Image (cartoon, rainbow, N blue to C red):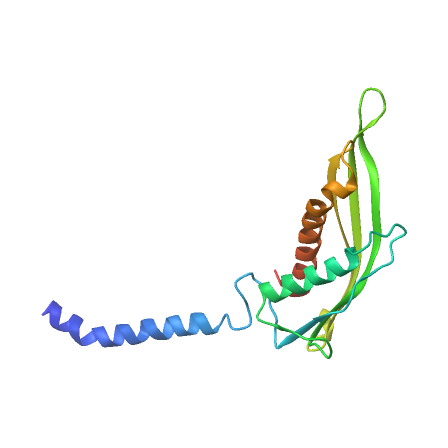
Length: 175
């Protein structure tokens, strides 16, 4: 008797399980695997981030712009466009400084800190209440006896990763 009841109800159980899975998957439609919510947006654009810092590092503006484009492209299902994007990122690099951080016993710098600050204007053309203008900043510490040119690649990678993720979280992560 038990096996007959089970056999009769089995197709119904399969159907219920299938519907539950379908609802669970479809409810995540506007989210991607990184937790970013793109809403109804289909496209994004990242305008060139000009370097307006008092101390200018050549090429940093181009590298940061490309980094942010790649980050958003890789973490969302949005398409990159050059104009009329649903989501628009623009701004400028406002600070680039190298300053001593730690001193040795004979009052010489033991460590330097590179700090980069980026001002970002985010425009969401689908949901204007999500627009913002904010400053994002991060740093990279390196030995005082090292030249900036020798650590620049690692420094930019670490700084851009942190600032880029902060921009992504501020614009697309609705935690």
